[in-house]
Image (tube, rainbow, N blue to C red):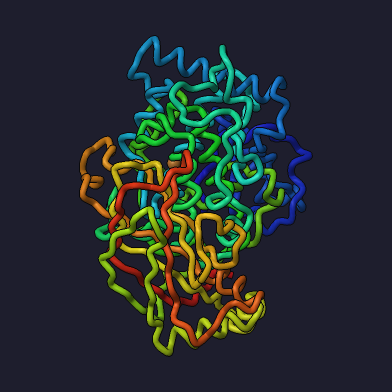
Length: 499
Ligand SMILES: [Cu+2]
């Protein structure tokens, strides 16, 4: 039985037209109107409405689809202004602008599988506080789709605008790199059947802020956009920049769409689902919330919202399975230094088991493999032990088997795998897990790269896989001058029940 949901807007009889499959898992209560809610529940169970419909979901829209002078943007600006006013009146007001940013500094998990659900919960509660502050009952947080709109949208610029922010390193015409946010990268992420590629890995031991391996979504576009905007966006106080909230709404949207495509993708492990972000967040009155579990954050529909790019109706009931362990593994210790001058190339000897599975993937359409095996195969590459450089103005482009690789090789090249960006290293609020000498590992799902190579006859099954790393500055086109040390590589083959 799902927990009771609060704050469902615009509850009308017309909303109760749905197939009854989802009736029992949805019990709604309007804030402060328990009696009404109880009446509705009674009517649900006595089947007065044979075909009840889901309640109206709030729909988060792309910010650039909204009229910059319209009511939605006006509400966002008003909410942010009021939250900033609260901070000016009381710097420690938890519902003020700074108070909300401090929640991130004090509690945010990164580089582990709490990253996505924590930030969903953070946005969910922020949206309610900002709605309350705006005084607009139907306020909804928009998102910034940086793949479609690679410039920071115009609503974030200009004088006398609560959405402007001082200290950004970009201008209004700077464009996010296609290596980080290009369509092929985003499609590969959405197609990936690997939970950890989307959500990052379990920390060991299980601690909210312990670093594990970053998946392609976090270590790629997420980290990149923080470093691209820069200024406060590259620190743990990044939510001070209003674009943080719309950036993370886009990350949240990608997770939601991935979940819709892979209904069984979010793992069943109780260490994850049962994790409680106790007293991390506050409600609109500033009261600390003792009970916000990962398990309560897995469906936007259950939380009363969706993105305009999601179906209006939730997909079927998932039957999640535990986190998969890889079936086969190849490793290549390296301990090399990556310098800006030339790509660092390392051959990985795959061994016969992985080679056989990769050959299968390369020769068959991915849908056919899934349908035949009822399990989704994936080949992942992990770049291990990357020591974050001091100069964070860098992205490492990752390629495989490209014999003409240079800085001019484009992001749509089929040998391109993804990017490694750096975010928030050595700048952690608690000074603990992010000590300056810590290293970070990054994983990528190679499945779509191998399919892309095979589709242009560029995958040779008799070759080892050669991983190539190329560091390039985020801003400017100088040769990146700092050396970055890399501990080694891992290639794994797994099969998951993600669909
Ligand atoms: Cu972030």
